[in-house]
Image (cartoon, rainbow, N blue to C red; front, side, top):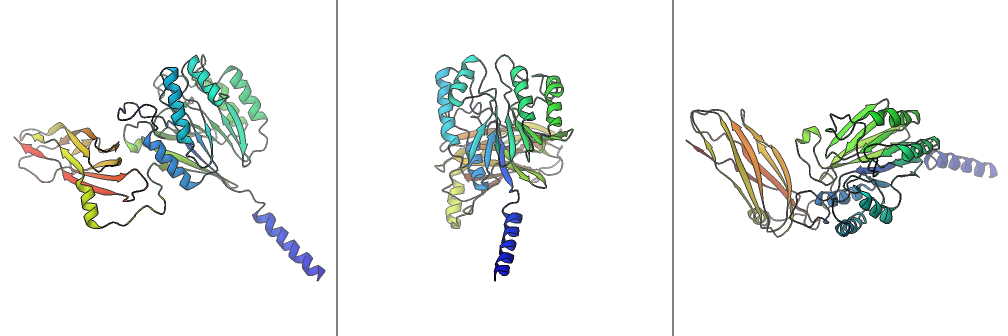
Length: 401
């Protein structure tokens, strides 16, 4: 009997070691540039971006072990009183995360001695590191007053010492606001990549850094240099412009640190839903909701003797009584183009919006019904209302001369 008990105990210990003792997957989310959208006059500057609030909701559904925001947390560039109001609103927003949360300083957060002092008083060190789940995380500050857009001096010395002391971490990840590895052409003349590639990049290679995350530019981009993964993730909530095909989209990044390597996923805002994504409603109710979104397109004038090249406007009025998230997509016949072909916007109740577009088409000899058609998909932003996607469609109105 003792032999049998010993055998059972040995089996249990072996099972426990192989399952519970094995390295668990560490999962973290990264996003950046989550500040209030510049030019949005429909709400006070201290109001968090709706895209940021949506990303918080979606990240909570995915339940990562921690979240890191790579900066531009508030709109900033203002007086001390307004700045503190913005930070108060930011603090309230990030309390919505249901996991550990860390932040990086962006240029909208610190731009002079006053704003740097405010940040220090509220949040402490400008750069720091921490460990979690066997991985090492390093947060740098690209906005140190008097030494912006570079990691130098005391901070560079600290970084070298920190990486040296890192030991056998199962992963090393670095975060900063500006992608200082971009050259002057790519950074639009804001900085040169020489200091980073001379002083910092060799340290990252030497000490086995897995990935570096930054923001600043409101897009997504990724590249690998000497085994180090460099990622720009600046689509966390601020305004985004340009084609999504080139990375200009609201998004966040999920990273899984596994024993057999890292997995990195880019998740477009709006792409994660809970089990209550759809609540059935009757067709009459849906028709009523559609009727409360008014959409009108200014008529385009076309001439028989030349190809079409004209501007028009889509005018939208929200009478639904709730804030809406809208996506506008143009369906294009052969030979036609509309710029932008896709637009996204949030529209408050009882508010209107105008989306200007440029339409190009071929020279016509007879009127045609084969013209661009606009599809508007929309949903209510509050999670209490779960018609996931209603749609309105309308053809481009034209008159021939």
